[in-house]
Amino acid sequence: QKEVEQDPGPLSVPEGAIVSLNCTYSNSAFQYFMWYRQYSRKGPELLMYTYSSGNKEDGRFTAQVDKSSKYISLFIRDSQPSDSATYLCAIQAGTALIFGKGTTLSVSS
Amino acid sequence: DTAVSQTPKYLVTQMGNDKSIKCEQNLGHDTMYWYKQDSKKFLKIMFSYNNKELIINETVPNRFSPKSPDKAHLNLHINSLELGDSAVYFCASNGGETDTQYFGPGTRLTVL
Image (cartoon, rainbow over all chains, first blue to last red; front, side, top):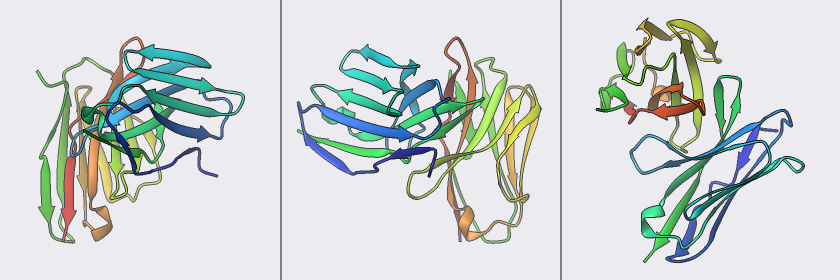
């Protein structure tokens, strides 16, 4: 089993929709969870950072970690065409990041 | 005032050639990384350096050799390039309160 699993999509939604992106992971010792956003032909940029379980909100974005089921989620409210990108979940393992395969999201106006 | 920069942005070369990619960060971070992103967008760590010292060396062919002349620079040299080396290579650096990794814009390598 891969350490981080993420459905690559693609995911297409209309503008204004609520988007749910998810990852599962295998190692219960992981504590730091991140979501990166990557626009086409650009480097990944950190979107959200969560330590241990719980929710974290930043504007239209909410990151959620459920350590009991080893499940991490990113919710995007009122999605915009500018949210169209690939979203990568990442887990910190020591000094390295283990990435999911990324979910490509397309928001149409 | 780019935080993490890479050169070149694009690199097209023939099989068997040797090439280098350069990375510089002006964030004052101690740790730098090289990642490879394949055609399916899977991003995987290759190397990590902390203050010029190699700390992570994933299962990467020894044709790939990182070099860190100082803690602000981490270069990647690739010998005897193969078709399967075609990918986007990202440099990143790490630091700050949240230990966040900051990525460069990537170098798109195409081996013909």
